[in-house]
Image (cartoon, rainbow, N blue to C red; front, side, top):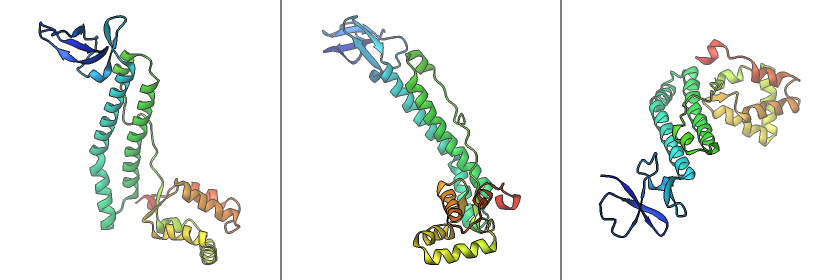
Length: 223
């Protein structure tokens, strides 16, 4: 039996299939209609229904969010495994970094997909839109244990930093942050700002901040 849209006061109110319309205005469903009334609008002047671009976009974006959540849920066990290894003392920073990058790629890719959908101006294009959870590449963060981070400074530099922390509350707070951290990200803006501030304060020699922040990770630093 043919499905028809029910129009009440110029708005789509539902669907019906009976032969007797019971006084309702009935119009054909638009091509591509999948049962979602929120994606349909009625053109009273034309006496016809059509898919709403805004409604179709909202539906596709909601689907993208759900798809992203599914991808994140699928990798949750990897994050749990990394966390358990950390607690057991078997921390593999390369594994942690890889999982974090994989999950962040899903988030950034879904954000980019949503923005791309919003930019489309055609219903068919929105309905045909697809995305990939790794479309936006995210490099693995450069993680160091607290001990490995300290080893990037010379003994004299660390001694000067410790002395400065005893005399400066802001410096002390920055030092404590890394003392308490299980690992340090060289890509964290707070890490970069703190190290560069040490150079500006004269605690580190000119050029040392870049050396500390950009030196490639050594094999022993990722294990």
